[in-house]
Picture (tube, rainbow, N blue to C red):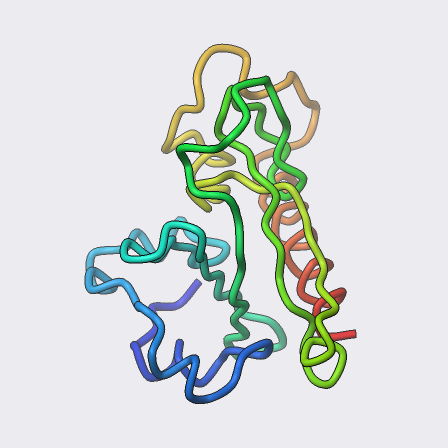
Length: 163
């Protein structure tokens, strides 16, 4: 993923108003992010732990989602699998819910998926972050194929939000 500026991130949101996008908390360490290892940029709002955000590049332009999820303190401690990167976690996967884009979202419709609670799927897939013993099931896919699957899963979630 190419590095993004705060302005590019704020204008990329598809499921919140311009005012909401202007007020949300964008990471201050954008220059320090491992952009070459990111399939998408994901972060949690430090002032509101039930809010998370995801930015992915699709068709050559950034698209962003505002998400809601339980705060880390309330995550279940059972072993669960992220539906984006297929990493197993004990207490590290949670339901991320995105209001649908447009009129459907204004009417309260939403879409959810189980994701790594820290939104670090890209780093887990590449082995740059460890989710613990047994977090990666044996696969015959190459790293490039696992990365492509992760990107396709994020794109599919984005498609459900914007449908």
